[in-house]
Length: 65
Image: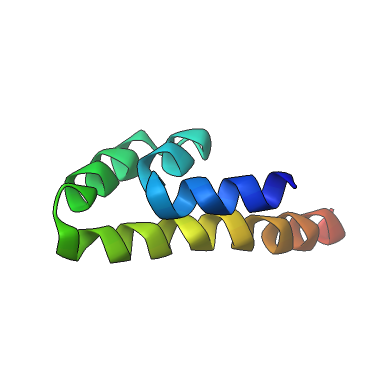
């Protein structure tokens, strides 16, 4: 359920996902991209990759420890 909610946020408010991921510079870039219709797609894809890539990356990091 949490992942579905985060996916929804990633599509409609990508800058929020970047702030949650502790990337304020990226959030600023995403909000500027989101201001244009053309830039919304790359910002959403960027946030989507953070949401769906984080679990795999965390599992990989845990296995390395």
